[in-house]
Image 1 (cartoon, rainbow, N blue to C red):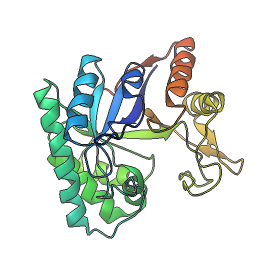
Image 2: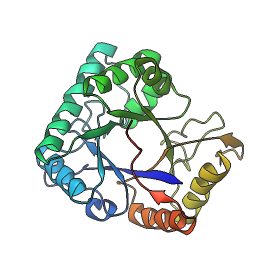
Image 3: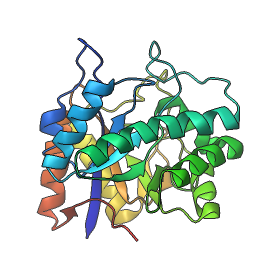
Length: 253
């Protein structure tokens, strides 16, 4: 069995450094790279893309709301048209860096509040999906299983990659526990591994309330800004390898 491990990377900005991208890029198979609106800058984008290419890691755009102060984790009242253009603007910049490094954009994954909002709002989901389609043939859209993002991708004929969060708690309805709530982020690598293996092998995850929530995914995310991201990535890689699973990017059509 093959499973993708992805991480949100390239979130440093100017003199401010976040995460151990170099180590994570040796452990994951897909990188979601910040495009400057919630984090990152042109220098960081180029550096992260080149490091990903050198390690054979698939390159993804990680666009968000224009919210550097809030790290893209606050909802904003952009119209669907404005959001479509903002997503295409960000992804287009990253695609240019990918081309300059001799690679290409493989996928697009919304960041933070945009991810959560588009998962629920069909009009916003369609805006994100349209921007993804405009990035070029074969660019996949990452998002939650059974979400408005999945519906929008299917309607446009896009390849949709279902995503599971190893280090985030889920509610009974399969949505993520808001970051403002206690226990929203899971810091114990062993717990993250148990949850991930249950999703892969049993098709379910235990919610914060103790319910068994049906869950199937093609890619597993861990957050690069998580203080234990490297330890979690190593634990996940070892657990998957022990079960004969291969870590690789989602296959292109």
